[in-house]
Length: 81
Image 1 (cartoon, helix red, strand yellow):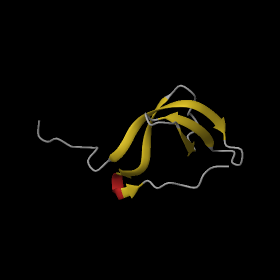
Image 2: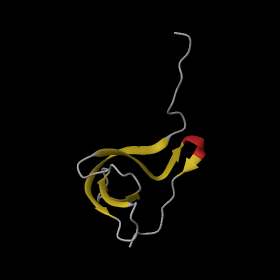
Image 3: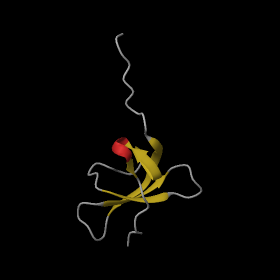
Image 4: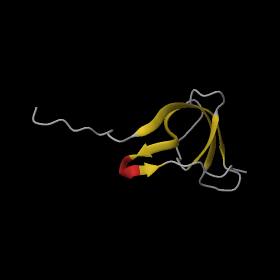
């Protein structure tokens, strides 16, 4: 082995979530409104544009405060209507 390359360096706050509900967003054709269990006291609502997300799937969830590659920080957004 010549080298080891770490792909996840600097990533913080990403957990596995279980999609327990999914419906089309009422105000946007290309968005989904999901209820996701991330192991907290209550499930969290996540709005996403993934066309293949569905109830029962396990997904990666970047929680509020997470840091992704490129120092991209996840912030809390407005509540969906």
